[in-house]
Length: 342
Image (cartoon, rainbow, N blue to C red; front, side, top):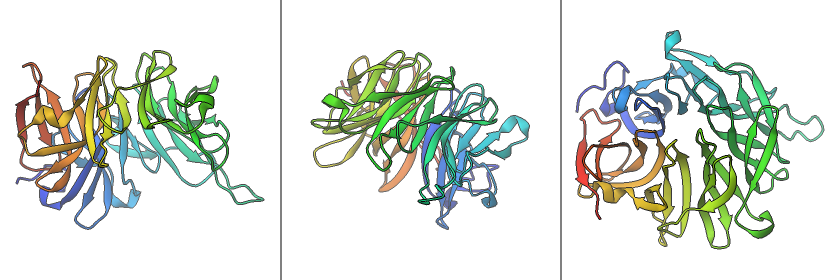
């Protein structure tokens, strides 16, 4: 094991890493849990290299959820981090309440997430609403709700946000797509009459949305047509499936659960779902969940290696059906190439 570099934390200080997003340069963001049990937001260099803690402990930034091509980052406690400004962290404005979080960031630096409103003076009830900021992490615009609390989870470069909203306070949630000034549109579920719940995770620049929704046979990952029209269930390898991200090529990643309740990371493309552990067969890894994919096909997620849960980065290489797997957070570059099963 070797030192991870300028971050100030070395491999023996990292208890676990969780990766949440990846940009076009292969920079990864997420949270690392140190030996002291505290969680801290991190960002890496290109291709998952040299992770660094984003801010001092006093900021309380426990997780980074989104990164754009310029390396700007957002995450818990609704922060905006811009390396071009010297690496300073800016707190985003609020919607008047206490508590907020950024979940996604687009090319112009708009952030989408959820923020608390002031407590109801009569009941004390606190609700939260989805928001989008102005470019560069500026002023928040309240995107509203379908009836109860709402939160945005994904954002494309056109300013279209997706997420979920309660239909009534404390009730089931439905996936939505929204833009500033255009209101919030309910994406529904797979069940007649829109019974059950649905959650939207991500939207690409063509307007295709992915997430997961209730069906008569359990929870099922979905994709929409460009423009967010119609839920189409992904053909799954397991009992339940959950889509986490979609890139501009229409490739989708997520995880499915088998009948025993075990998680498996997947890549879906061209109508076919592939189990990602098969792509690194013989590596010693079991890949349990894929969280994000960029337009180069690099995938980040989590899995188990040598009995420990770790973050991973999968990078496709020129040979057909071949991947390079890197264990994020290990001082030693653990990388293997394996040909996928046919």
